[in-house]
Structure formats: structure tokens, C-alpha cells
Length: 123
Image (cartoon, rainbow, N blue to C red):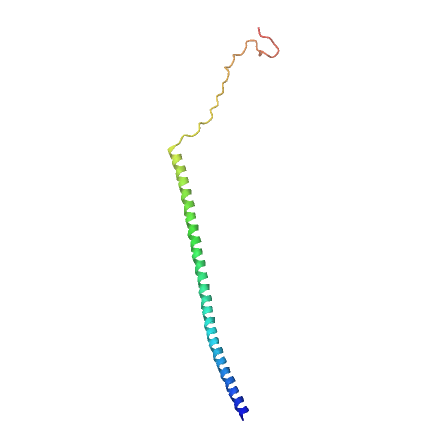
């Protein structure tokens, strides 16, 4: 009977160890579930953060583009304003080229009826 009592005690010890191991496994499973839910929350927060940073970057680009267009428009406006003022005030213009042509005075016709220099000598 001593051997049977010893086997009974060992079986109870093994059963107790199995219960402890099962309890630990349940605790680990609970912790793993908590970690999994936290990971899902972090993933969702990361996606939200990514969306918001993209939106902010898009707004920054639009604002930058808007200011560039305003600056280009202002510079163009000032250029045309200065051009109009220059034309209205009549700034000195470069002088036009003046061409003078001198025409020799006309010679009276000769009395002989022929032109000099065409083979005849004048008298």
C-alpha cells in the first residue's frame, strides 16, 4: 500500500503543477490579449497621425504656393505700373536718326541742244 499512496501523492503533485501551469497560461493569454489590443490602438493612432501630417503638409504647400503667386502678381503689377509711369512722364527717348541729303543745284539747259559729256565738246 505504500507504493499506491506514493503514486497517489505524485499524481496529486503533478495535478497541482498542471493547474499552476494552466493558470499561468491563462494569465499570459490575458496579457497577450492586452498587448494585442494596445498594439491595435497604437496602429490606429499611427494611421491617424499619418493622415493628419499629410493634411498639414498639404496645407503648408498650398499656403506657400499662394504666397508665391501673390509675390509674382505683385511684381508683375509693379513692373507694369513703372512702365506706365515712364510712358506717361515722357522719359527721354533716344533721338531718331536724321538723314540729310544734299541735292546739287540743277544746271540750266544748254543752248546747243545737246548735253555735254556725250561725245561732243561744248563751245
